[in-house]
Image (cartoon, rainbow, N blue to C red; front, side):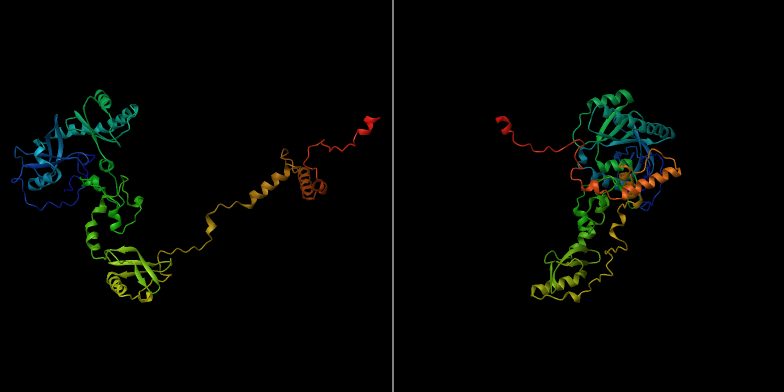
Length: 419
């Protein structure tokens, strides 16, 4: 609700100051004593101002926790804090409201900074301990309380994890009270922070606190790309901003007809492939013709549907079809399609041919000196290789091993045996 604490995620001072949308609202602290307090990252809790301290948004206060105390920043007070409390807490009657102690002093802020300085080293060691125990989990972040006596370990896991032994290791090494809290991919992105594709700080790390599930139907209803890779955010899930304008697109889509969108024209059947809800246009393509596309307004589509019901098939030329030269989706290639292929230079082929001939009496590679005698011998050897070897080509037994001789058939030895 407030932009004063956008940079309170990883530091104790507000670096980025945005526009304060609630600055002109009247003070309503007398109507409710509930206070909304923000801690590190997106964690927010509600407390009760029993001492009636003069609190306003942006004040650092010391609140009670179990056990010890913590230091946070006031984000909402009065009537708005009570409304937000009833909205976020499903069963307010079972929620125990802790009390606000006092405003934070310089000593409290200094102790909070000391606790925050331990978080990075603790997170690295916590990940190593979980890996040594072979647990299928990931430690996303570590948050120390303001009294530096308790820490919250945020972890990600697909299923249930038995981390009882891990808690003992953490308590023994860090000498603090340990609290394990499981989070999802969206909460992890809010804890880490970053810059989105829009160029601004992530909504989950700056102001968004509730993370509802987003389906691919939200992107399809807005006419966006169905590719999950383009619609995914830093967390790997669908972007939360897909829900911001969804209601406007659903309201605009109610004006479009839900049936008989396939138009019967004189040149064939036109099928819709794209809908622009804000411009109130539908793009069509003729069935069996890939290049014929045109757009029709919502009023023209309704007129054609009424004509089709009466058995009338209007001409497609009556609608402004996009010429092929003006189609922005067409891609022209000025060069050949094989311009990206790896072409081997002719020089390598010549070298390969020379290597093949040198094995059979070509140039001697052992003598690498560039003397005139060697050059002359090499040229003579090359000329001999170019001459056709008729004896070798015409000999049918050229592939036989040396020393092999065909045996001649001997005459029958019957007469000798008779003698």
